[in-house]
Amino acid sequence: MPYNRNILCIGAGYVGGPTMAMIAHQCPDYRVTVVDINPERIAAWNSDELPIYEPGLDEIVRAVRGKNLFFSTDVEQGIRENDIIFVSVNTPTKTFGVGAGMAADLQYWEKTARQILQYAQTPKIVIEKSTLPVKTAQAMESILRHTGNGIWFEVLSNPEFLAEGSAIRDLTNPDRVLIGSRETKSGLLARQILVDIYASWVPRERILTSNIWSSELSKLVSNAFLAQRISSINAISALCEKTEADVEEVARAVGMDSRIGPKFLNASIGFGGSCFKKDILNLVYLCRHYGLDDVAAYWESVVRINEYQQERFMGTMLTAMFNTLAGKRICLFGFAFKANTGDTRESPAIFIARRLMEEKAEVVITDPQALKNARVDLNDTAGNVRYVADPYEAAAGCHAIAVLTEWDLYRKLDYRRIYESMEQPAFLFDGRNILDHQGCFDLGFNVFPLGKPPLKHF
Ligand SMILES: NC(=O)c1ccc[n+]([C@@H]2O[C@H](COP(=O)([O-])OP(=O)(O)OC[C@H]3O[C@@H](n4cnc5c(N)ncnc54)[C@H](O)[C@@H]3O)[C@@H](O)[C@H]2O)c1
Image (cartoon, rainbow, N blue to C red; front, side, top):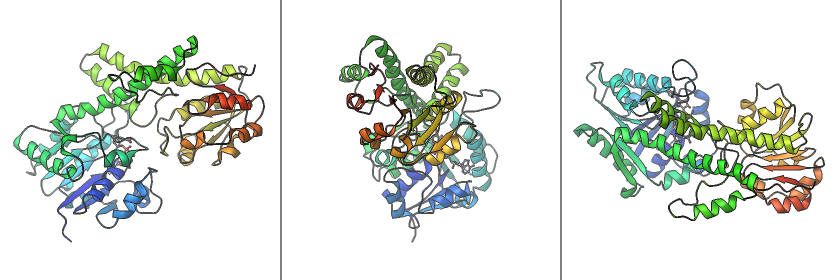
């Protein structure tokens, strides 16, 4: 059957896969193709075991795959056959040369632009879905437009705001969709085409349009603000531990101020994920580039506090367990960077596991979705590490449990059974403040929450 629109997405990752599945699901008259250079990833998207875990994703993909959603490795054909092209390739932090450790590595991005240029035979709307430094669209336009092949390319910015773990909910009912364009006749025309795609299911008042630079910058700023809130409450958790204040009570009192609001005020071992750190560092790099050193220092401190919080958690474990972890068996409850995902990129658990191994502790890792990734993350370590799916089995014989991911399942375990299976004295370090601390203390655990006085039996 003829489709009303043919849409391509280059990059079948955590963003490309779910966002395109949602468009295909909401717009049955559009044909959506997702391409990737990674054949295993595409094979997984075409199989019963999708390459990423995301609640609700399986159902949506199953409903539309093979009907109006297709996954392929044929980038060339994809570019030839589609006139609306989302680009959702990875934009990690640069690890080499100028800007190493700070700036975004745009090599995948630029390669994609050159592929589009190489294979395009008709005009294209190219949409930046990846998170990019402000002014990237200018570089994209320079590559696409100044080669004299006569084909018109219009570049739009449409950053993705989904959060892993709730991607399907976020895509179904987004707080806002942001579309930036050039304010030229062709820019506004292209912008309208993209607005119409989203308007198939997103209320018009939540579809924001802006100039292209505001759109690019808004994504970096959103992530910086979210991360800043986490670092703010984590910084206060350290002060709470010194003053016998309770960080949850403080967060409740602060969050009831309607100007502040209650979200993102849970103290924790810190933020992880592929985006927050990389996007803030990117912002810091941009500020420095424009000579705004004080602004750069302000945002850089958000990352510094995140590292401080992880080191502090590690210090608490070491001090509490009589200043030695050598030969002790520590069970990590959770390895994913947050609940409801198998993603471990930049997970604080990687740092904690490595530091524990440096202290010569034995590490047992359990997680309902992230064990496969955990093995990859730690495959270069010489330390003693085991991966155990069942949390009861994982905790048995351990000296301590550290809760690193806020999986709901950890709230519901039988902690009496766990306590009785552990070495004594048994320690519980709650890096997410999700457990019943008094209840666990009453069972016999020595409990170390974040930002609250510890509950110790000695
Ligand atoms: N993960 C998130 O929650 C999230 C949320 C919002 C925005 N973002 C941004 O979206 C972008 C993508 O993130 P992700 O988490 O989906 O990354 P990802 O690493 O999961 O996926 C990127 C995919 O692009 C593919 N790719 C790279 N170069 C290619 C090329 N030339 N041709 C075809 N495929 C190519 C890779 O093989 C990979 O599968 C990043 O810029 C990220 O910052 C991510």
